[in-house]
Length: 354
Ligand SMILES: Cc1cc2nc3c(=O)[nH]c(=O)nc-3n(C[C@H](O)[C@H](O)[C@H](O)COP(=O)(O)OP(=O)(O)OC[C@H]3O[C@@H](n4cnc5c(N)ncnc54)[C@H](O)[C@@H]3O)c2cc1C
Image 1: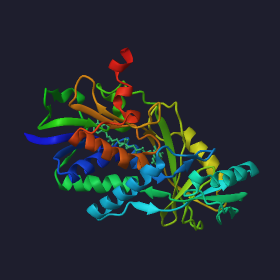
Image 2: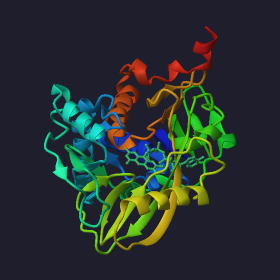
Image 3: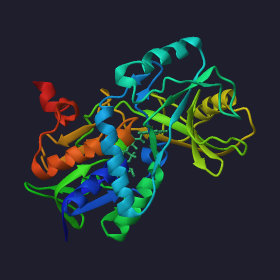
Image 4: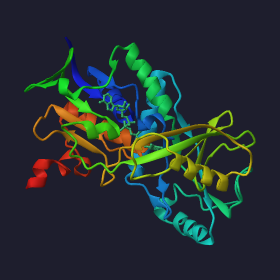
């Protein structure tokens, strides 16, 4: 029998960040993951953007999240001797005078000065369709999430911590002070399955409002773009003239597979954005683990305290993940209180009945 402090199910961004925190604190862990099948982290751009949406709204808690995120990814790069953090401004296309006016107003706000440059750049980057102007968002970066989870997968395999397998919920034995799963016992089991939490019999009450996203990988030989460019779609340079281009947001869908509808939407917008020849290299899709109130979720099951959950990173896992994984690790190890805004008990069936 293999005995560990914590067994983690799911090695996407959430499970990986939590595993790394617990390992760094000297805890013993086991990880089970179905080789990233259906993982949002395996196709996400991993952009961290402090100011989002048409109305240029500052992201929730971003001033606190940013320094923790950068320090976490930098430390992990050193630990694995791999690179996955790329600093890059976001150039945002402004197509209408009203958008330009909004930018000018918002960039003057005290709260936004660190993030929105007041100077606009005329027109689009060479190779893209003309626009009115570009605004520059600062303190933005990208975590190469596919590379990140692959790097950690290799490390966990080397350390004999990771089993590549689909977790069988029926095989879990729940005791008073431990759980047993096949040949492993653990003091606690933490579920980090992303949107696949809907199949989890203990946590299927969490009100997920899932958002499917589709993406195209393009090769654009004559586009010399170093920064992230956000127009009708977001163009993320991947190197060697390849670009991650996306994404769609679909709230009603049949499965997690790339669809003709998604491709048509993306190709129409690519035509509106790109002026030069390109080749489609790939078409990918996955489901974002979004919760109704757009906040992460963590905590223990109301009836089985050895069963816990860490999920709900939604559309902003790259920025939310490091801060909340560290907070949850402190709860698991020291019993620190979980902040009410992310606590599982905001959804628990027990609380609902009160
Ligand atoms: C198109 C797209 C673009 C995105 N762009 C960005 C972006 O630019 N910036 C940003 O911050 N976020 C972005 N996101 C969101 C980001 O991907 C998520 O917030 C984050 O990756 C969620 O991580 P997770 O670990 O919770 O879930 P996942 O990445 O889905 O990982 C869950 C893991 O659990 C495993 N698993 C599930 N069930 C089982 C089981 N029964 N047994 C074994 N293993 C299991 C899966 O194999 C998977 O590896 C994007 C998402 C999409 C889809």
